[in-house]
Length: 462
Image 1 (cartoon, rainbow, N blue to C red):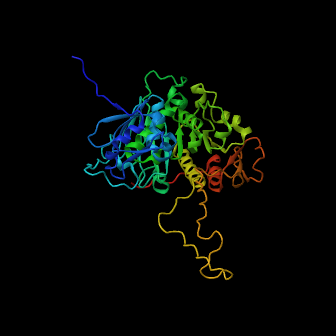
Image 2: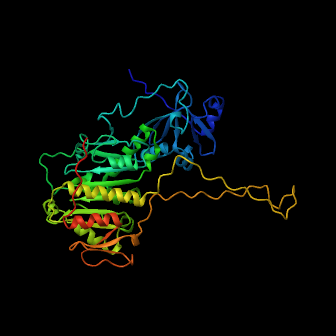
Image 3: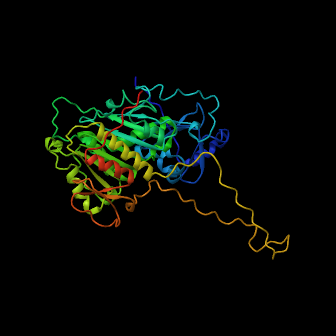
């Protein structure tokens, strides 16, 4: 006997929903509202899935599941008003089907829908205690939230085989551990992954596809952020700035490739003792501050058969006058150590302070404007021409996502001698063995690092 498949009732066109107006009117004001291509707004009880063809949804609790094709929606309004659904739309166009299960709880400030059961804490039910997890294809991603609402994301990308998370799972707790400053001081979530690259019969000269974001791993990372944003009902994760700490063969290659894949999303990057930096520098990536850390006696790139490493890619980028810093470790080997990690972390923390607009205060209100004094030349009770009409509101300008690097606040440093000089002409080309250093704090760290004098702080007692 042939099985009957669940049938979706198509919604062609959206004006058909008007026939159900009496139902829509009975929904709470906090229901999810979508605007149709005809300009009419329709309220839904639940948005269930985003598919390549469109959305599946319910108008009312226990009602039939209906289909809404993408061409029946005002996509501009969708991007503006329903960021989680719009992000799912973009992923669906690439062939994914995304479980959304969005209800009125996704509307900012809305009370829970009547009769709705409280949902379990997402972190408490996670596979790894204190971490959320999601799988996209063969890659598993893990996210640890800060103590408050996330303002950014720290991508920790480590290891020769793409097993980055194993270096975090046992040491990083929320608000504690080696990366806690990013969470407690700047409200950054921590993102890592397990790419599952086999270690048996490993050939270090063979570059696996995961290294290169444009071959699928970049889109997988964005899909994972979409999954986390939906699970947490936090659409701000979709647009959050990303800082990247990346090291070793696979980790550093993926970090470099991702910033070239989406430079507009990346606030700053540290690349430590890696190679396979195969994407050519271009003006968009030259604006992103990057610290390349490599050992003076490091020969990883020769072992891996990669022509593109810190020295070579810095030389290629030089004509663009990039905001990139050459961090050669004095007598450094191929191995990571506490000094390189400390330098990389402090660099990223400085770039967050330098590039992110300040947090808006949640307390206090702007001072009340002083009431205008009456004009002595105008008799009381009479109005001047035009008085009583509200002037048109000035357009609200959004704060820039990232602040531009002001090169006049930077230094030029000589990698061989450790000398640094304040930049007077930001357009002047750097001399042989010179590099750009973005600010005073990094300048102090950099001088000690290239001279072998930088010492990491003692670990904090846990």
